[in-house]
Figure 1: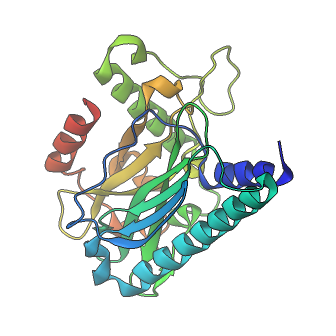
Figure 2: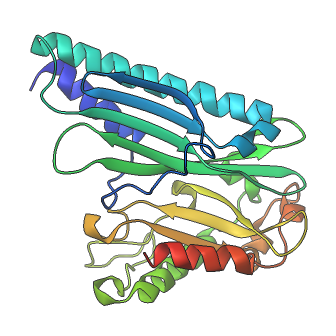
Length: 272
């Protein structure tokens, strides 16, 4: 294996934390998910899409575009170095797609999430998720930990996340209906363990109360709580489960319950 190829594989793994079930989640039709950038160069394809609703938040959209293009340019440079070391075109595809979906808003916060998909040879591609929280007033990113009080015991949030994952597993039935416990920090013999909430991408859950989020939506890659064939999970944790942990600055952005319409749509998507 050449040095350039090893660098390329390492770069892809940094971009994508884990594999997911084939095929990748379908993208929206082109008219609703415009392509901000696309390159097709031999066996290499790179693409960045940004949902039109992000245009309502130009500073956030610019941030997502800039960060996406940095990742894409690094990926393209790695592919070209690998080609040079191999003495020509590679005999396998090298693909990277970054997608940001429509944001969810409260009076003071905006969140966006989306898909990262790469293929660098092998049996299947490597998807993962990314998410961002954005301060509408100060036009800056809000780190996940900053939502919560300093020193707050977030084990309650971790357990609520695990319970939500297990409920999603049970709803699918079959081989998926088993518990990935132990909880973080506990000993156990299982292959899979529940993830730590702050180590998991999350966005805001649409709520049933105007101007407030009804909870958090955690995006679970395959291999985190189950095998590749099991696919991805989207776990919703209602605001009531973590309201006491929120910082005073952001506590007012949450209230009520996750929107029934959103939960119905999510159940339909995860049943596919």
